[in-house]
Amino acid sequence: MKKVLIVFNYMQPADGVCRTAISFANALAELNEYEITFVPMFKLDKKMIPLLNPSIKVRKVLKIPYIRGIDRLTSKLPPKWIYKSIVKKEKFDIEFGYCWRNPTIAIANSLNKDAKHIIYTHGYNNASKYYPLADLVIAISTKNAKRISEEVNGRVPVIQFTNMYNEEKILKNAEETPSFTKNYDKFLFVTCSRLSEEKGYLRMLESAKKIKDEGYDFNIWMIGDGPERNNIEEYIKNNNLKETVTLVGNQMNPFPYMKQGDCMICSSFSEGYSTVCVESCILGVPVLSTDISGADDIINKAKAGKIVSNDEKGIYEGMKYFLDHPEKVNEWKETLKTTRTSFYKENGMKELKKLMRTIENIEHKE
Image (cartoon, rainbow, N blue to C red):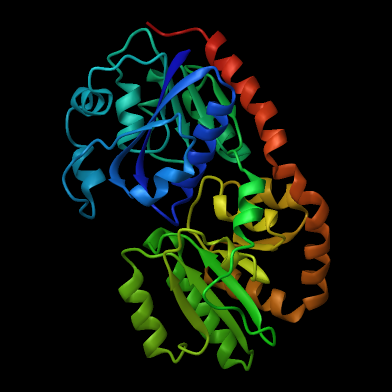
């Protein structure tokens, strides 16, 4: 069996990259052709390990406790040292740098000349000097694949490959009983992600306040935790939103909460291909997304939801549209009963087999 390394940053709840990495690794394991080592560099929440196929080996790189900004600090270290700290003394046949910064830097500077070096990019990052060092770059959205292809100008092949999703687990987990349920008399917006600045949550709350002040009555559930939590709590308190907005916190299983939503909001400044938007479509919940990479891929495939300009005005107008057009929201929910199957695992497995054949046949750089 070929040995595969998948290295990324954080193994934690409410982390889209982590969830897609788990799905990708589990799908690879099902092919029964690969021995997989799964390496989160900075944070390993052991409660997440049972989500992986038992055959997958898991180990963390840094033994010290996580501190905010450690990924930026360590990225300044010599790339060869970063690589050595990840692989230890193991030899792999295929090495995936599964996200930006340290994983990308490490695999682009791999010391294993016999391995295939794959950069798996979830967004559009300032990584152009690293891409040509890889054997293949994978972009998860059509828009980013095109941008990167133009940037590297033929120096490395670039392909688009959509993340893997396991609808059976998502739908099964969604049936678990949540600790609380929605008020069915009110429209419910849901968000689910790390509470961090790039997710645009403060501008989403500013939009919500304006709409509330106009007399609309609705609820927002925010699933997840992160460095922006204190600022978000302060905004909610200072703007009389306590009866409107609920901070649900980190949930090992967010799906029973997501499933209750009438709309999933993605208010991010940037994304690669929003995991939570796909999961929402699978759960039958229409999506409101800012105009970010991957949004058009997802909503065109789902035929349910709305893309708005990437600013507060767009979010405000999008939220009002959902509130003002309940008949359209119900139509989208009915549409998703059919279109969500396009995100299902069966289709993903076919594409995964093609991807791995491409990787194995690609010309390796010495």
